[in-house]
Image (cartoon, rainbow, N blue to C red; front, top):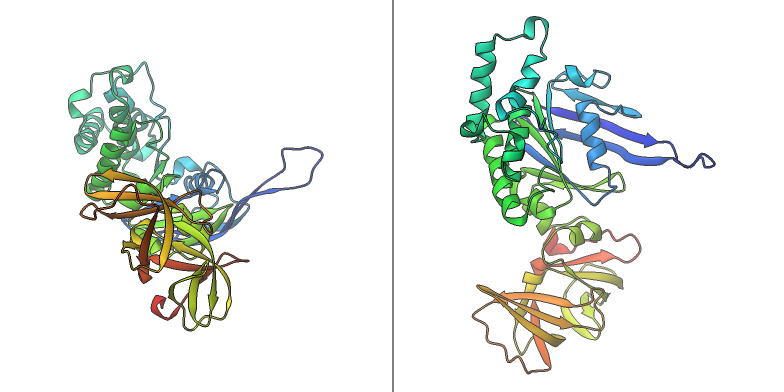
Length: 368
């Protein structure tokens, strides 16, 4: 099912009765979600990602704009008639019901021509339970399950209606680190097995990048960038996107361009041949540093953290916006921990320039 959002806007009235200030939760969002793909809505709290999800499912009505499922305009259609499956952050399972009863519940509420026989309902319940690998847990209560198992029950309950669109609202937030990793892999497997168009809301950029076919990065209700996860990471449209994606985060420096050369402090670290002289922000990904005593970029060494196959060099630089500079280098590099400074070459494809005023990306010849 193709989902098309046309100029979608949601405005909430001010909570302060003495103020006329409105809150624009989503601002002119236009995007087409391809059929059978998993799209991640990504951004910090308050960026409008959950509001967008609730408008897609019908729990909230847009202030303006339209929503299409395929050729059908569903903007004013009630939530129960849209054919969507919604999975909440807190699972919302009925504690007094077994897993089987929880999964069957949406089918038991079907009416008219959609009503199924008891045998058909059971067959469908066990079918989706097998897809999410909980078919052996059908007689248990939610309290007898782990967090990851409860999440699978919630997904099965959403899938049993055979929805046109599956919507996941921060479904992994309540799980520990190991379960998060395992469950996000399961969500991706389930989505591929069912081929249901899926929208996944999260503030965790690692989650979004690892399982999404496409990501939509949002800030204050405005879409910042849309694309394949790796493409957005490799070519951020602005400083916000560059800083939001990546662990460890991108290193940001006060810099300048003079005569086609990028400077951080007084050190020339790269080329910008077609860019006018100006002050800029220089962003360098942690993996963009090449340790070399002849390198033009100098930092004061703080610590060396060995992380198995990689080494994290923790340093400082007067021009750095971040408290520390982090460089991720291969563990084969030998570093004298007692030295005062370290020098680097900078990989051109891992260095990005941003306008000081607008924070928009400044593209150089090699970027285009």
